[in-house]
Amino acid sequence: MSGSGGGGGNPLAVLASHFVLLSLVAIGGANVVIPDIHRFVVEGQGWMSGPEFAQLYAIAQAAPGPNVIVVTLIGWQVAGFAGALVATAAMTGPTCLLTYGVSCVWGRFRDKPWRKVVQAGLVPLTVGLVLATSYILTRASDHNLAGYALTAATASVLVMTRLNPLWMLAAGAVLGLLGVV
Amino acid sequence: MPPAPSSSSAATTATASSSATVAAMTAEPCEAVTVAALFLAFLKMGLSGFGGVLPWARRGLVEERRWLTEQEFAETLSLCQFLPGPNIVNVSIHVGARFQGPLGSLAAVCGLMLAPCAIVIGLGVLYSRYGQIGPVRDAIGGVSAAAAGLVVAMGIKMVKPVLRRPVAIMFCAAAFVAVGLLQWPLVLVLLVLAPLGVAAAFAEAAWERRRRTAAEQGRVAQ
Image (cartoon, rainbow over all chains, first blue to last red; front, top):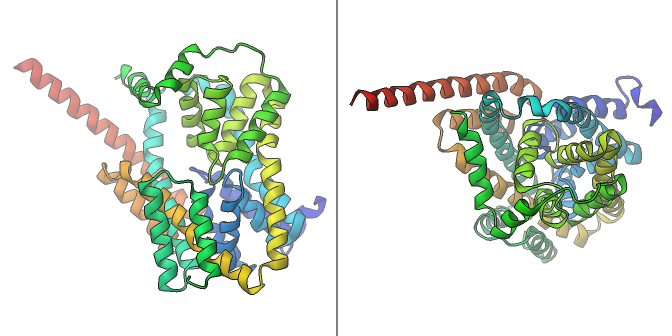
């Protein structure tokens, strides 16, 4: 853990520096940085395959808690327990400090019109990035028509109903077990 | 112009369930919110939230504990979406800071994160031990196809308000193409798109203001 600040080849140091950088542009939360994490750990570093990445994402979704724990799991896969700690700390630490700092001065700009305008400028980017995440995960996880059909069916059910998403994940597990997808 | 933000947020409050509105009106900081209470409250929210904790945060903070009014929660959320980082983690920091300063933030964020991190690492251990066994691998493969669908659904729900503004559609599409299709590095893409997007929003707001003043002057002239 304490050696995480080592040389450039150290996976912990590489993870930490990349995730700190990503966390600072993660406007909209963990789901907007998924495409870049995929690019980095699958294609850049070769730490895992595309399907493995999609499976880790699925496991994190099936666990309770903030979406950002997907980063914990990816860190764990890359470098074990220390990787999980470093990835989580890098992804949440700097933004926690920033939020704390801004909380203290929030009253001063809360009602300023420019705040709403800045937000209106950033929201479309967040949405585009969430769409990019859905594209990357669909590509990484689905290898046949039945897989794409399951992804599409899950999406439609969740857009049109208020069903708990865990039911769809369970349905996915059953269909996978039966060899359908 | 000044009354617009408050009236619009009041409208959001009004559209929330009526029981929540009643709760918001009667909410008062009746007892001191201790560091331990912050830890336990966020622990419970973290463990309840499957596929996102925010709805549980609203329920826990506004309806159950009445630490925040509906209005205060909406404002907290709007701050936390404005800042980088996971929204719910930012909410825990902000709420903790409000009641107990730095120690409160620390307690809230630890309560939120510790148990889910431990659980997900436990699942990771199981995955690396059994993940390659045929049936387990097939099942997780199915789950990952469904999990991709969860994000598709989230994207579809989020894209609706964007479709009302042509400029917003352009930036949304640019972010999708650059990061999703071309897989360019996110940091570089946002270094270019974020300032442009904000500048476009300012131009749009200025244009909207001028159009409204012109319309008003037209009415006055009649």
